Amino acid sequence: MITTNLNRPKRRWYDLPVPLAAAICVMCLLCIAVIIGRMRSAPAVVATPTPGLIILFATPQIERPIQVAAVRYVVAFDQPNGTAMGPMPAPSISAVLARYGDAWVLVPWESGRVWVRAADVGLPDVADLQPTVAPQVVYEPVYQPAPDVATPETTSQVTTSDNPAAPVQWATSGPIRAEDFTQPDRKASCAFLGCLGTK
Image (cartoon, rainbow, N blue to C red):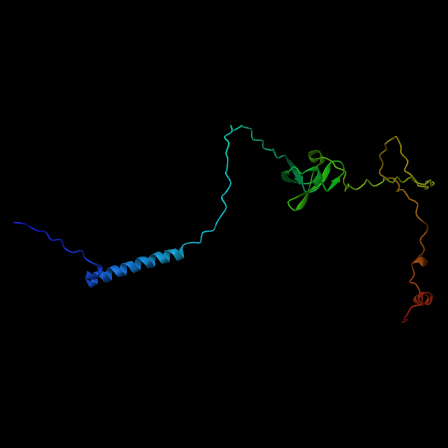
C-alpha cells in the first residue's frame, strides 16, 4: 500500500479570520503613528563646529612657598593727641590729606577722616593744619614817676602795746564835692541834643 501525504495549502492574508485581520491592521496603524510622532517631536540638530584638539603636557609641579602680604596696622585717633579710636590698616602715603605739624597726618578711613601719627605713615608735602604760634607781645611800661604813697615803716624791734598802729592813708584822686552829684537839667540836655519829643 502506498501512502500519500498531502500538504495543506498555505494560508493567504485574505483567508484570515476578520477579528484577527482587524487587530493586525490596528497594531500597524499605531506603530506608524508612534514613529511619525517621534520624528516630529525630535529636537532640531544644529550643526556645531568640532572643538579644537586639546593637548595636555604632564609637567612636574614646582612647589613654591605661598607669600602672604602682612597687613600692617596703625592706631587711629579722633584728633591730634586725642582719643584712640582703634587699629586700622596702614594707609599709603598717597592717601594723606593734610598734616598737623610734624607729628600727625589726616587720612580717610571708612567714609570718614582720622588722624594717625606721621611716624607710622610718613610725612608727605601736604597742607599743614596746625595753627602757627601767636607772636608774643612784651609790654614794657613807659616811664612814669612813682606816686607818692605812704609806706609803712618797718622796725627791727618788736614792741607790744595796747594801741594798734595808725591806718595807712593812700592817695586818692582829689576831694569829693557834693555839687558833682546833682541831677542833670533835662531841658538843657534836650536843647543841646535836639530831642524829638519834650515832656
